[in-house]
Image 1 (cartoon, rainbow, N blue to C red):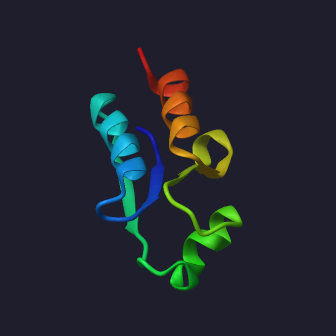
Image 2 (cartoon, helix red, strand yellow):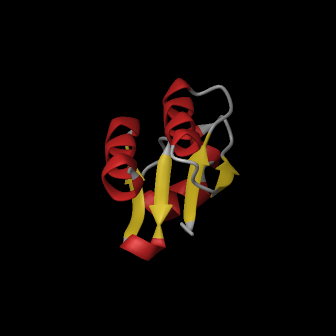
Length: 82
């Protein structure tokens, strides 16, 4: 079972792209909704060094804070795809 965490923002199209891929691959993940204001996103900044979302954390594979939706989708396909 994957131990995935996703930092996301409600209504964010880039985040939706990642959650759609997670659902498509039938992967469980813990969602962390971040505040709209970048200045309030201290939790995601601690994880990834930046305030943008989405950010994926996959401790089982040494991923401590991967940004960029396209990179995350590609990583999920390569790591968990059939």
